[in-house]
Length: 334
Image (cartoon, rainbow, N blue to C red):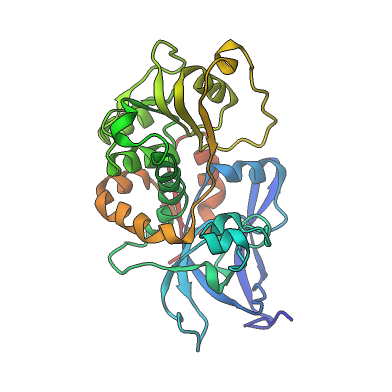
């Protein structure tokens, strides 16, 4: 049975109505169920995957790159700064026992998607989704430990077993959004030293270059790569990646796209062996390596956080984010 920690109390939260409309409203405090704690949201980073909710509306409060403070008197983590791991996971199925907590076979629910998320003052969080954040990580960077660092770091670690740094040669990153830029830094950290980035946004491409990457013309098919990290989610980029990946190479699909994808099965697809890999989020065991990535490249990650604002300014800043005017803006609630 769910028990409300503060009966009749009210908080503010963003409501995604659809048709690119967000309002900030007073809503009831969330119920906190058995095995859950209440987290006071401190920062929630905006994410491009929320554009779908912006366009179509959301049943639950959106926002899934959440960092806050546990407010559960008597709980061992009360008062602790924590990032919120968004995939709910049972901890005992075959996938969880293997360590693949992001691919739990028993529970299919994501915080900010199938249950309330972080564009609000408070959010209920299952205990096993709390990731304590060390004190040397500043609040504004803490949400990056999730999608920007976690998703990108997991993708690079996963494929490094198939195309290791000493065998990769030049690597192509398609898309220089937050995850693509995170991939650049994760590649560097793991020893890939010839990184090329393609993106039509000149400002983002310039940031990638400041991170040590080389500019690659968008749509250029003159060069082949043993490793391609497709971070834009664009179907045209995926199809180009199939063309550009070398035999026995790997095309990693990191970017998301909910629209149906038709693979163009031309001869370039049929006449070579290659790996096409999809990676999703990251396992809980990756959190410590993610913290180390953040520590290693703090100055670079600070460049990505190019806006902080309160809840009342979320609607206008989400619109700016959707237009590409901001890279990784952060909702700041304290």
